[in-house]
Length: 113
Length: 110
Image (cartoon, rainbow over all chains, first blue to last red):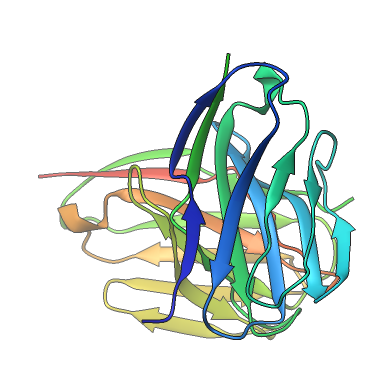
């Protein structure tokens, strides 16, 4: 089944404790992206990747890191999480950038205490 | 900076009624997407609109795009309870990211 998977789905952590949210797609998509969803703000892009080893900042990259060493994986790293990063996070992928709908993962609900 | 505005942000409607959700955006683009999100779930693609005048229909939903007016509409015909969800429009101008509207929460009452 074609899908985007994320792990973990739920995470409660404390300020400053490094964490990684994994994202994997099995559709051989070139483009992958991370978004955060906050009430009343819709989804905002954190980082995106056009292909392996090619990543760039979205609208709200502060406090996040990403890497794209393999085509299928695009982990999101929070080096020192803070309470304002409490949010619902979505990973998405598409065959290529532009003119393609994006397919979203199930989401990761993160709470930083 | 691209801004995407949806209205209304909340819509409560009776079953069987018609209504339209509007999506305005501030910068020229010919790529607009509509997504649906059920509570606690991920986003599901509804429509992909890639040219001026594009119109797509699926069941009771119809989406259109007017790139000159920078406006997309999502029209609901004879609403049913199953359409209750949050609807997002998203605009792509650079080919590498989507800018989302805040979402329209739709509640269909029987």
